[in-house]
Image (cartoon, rainbow, N blue to C red; front, side, top):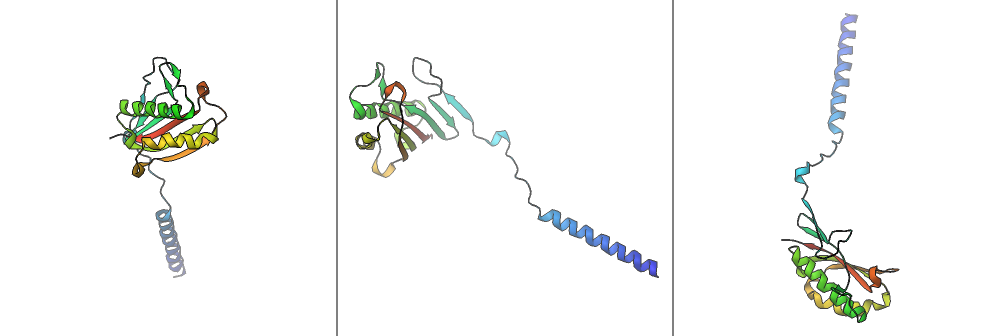
Length: 164
C-alpha cells in the first residue's frame, strides 16, 4: 500500500511538473517573424540628369516614397548669381524637375530639409520657398545653418515625396 501511495505521489508530481512546464512554455513571447524579402518594397536608384557623373543618386525610390538628394541653385553654367533668393528659386526649380523626372511633383512633397550657409538669410529663403507650396499642403520641414555647402552655395534643399 505504501509503495502504491508513493507511486501515485510521484505520478502526480510528474504530471504537475509537466503541466506547469507547458503553461510556462505557452506564456513565453514568441520571437517576431521576419518578413521575407518579397514583402519589402523594391528599391530603385535613379541616376542624375546631370551630364557629369556625381557620387550619389539623384533620387532613390522605395515603394511609394521618393528620397531626393540635396539640390543646389545651379543651372548649366553653375551656381546662379543673385544671392539667396535667386539660389532658392533655382534650387526649387531643380527639385521640381527631379520630382517630375521621377514620377512625382511638388504637390507630393511631404518633408524638406533646408541647409543654409547663413541663418540670417532664413527669412529671405522663406519668401521664395513659400511660393512653391500651397498653404494647405506645406511639407514638414527642418532648417539649419551649416559651416559650408558645395560650390559655396547659400542654400541646399533635400526632399521626400510620394509617388503615385
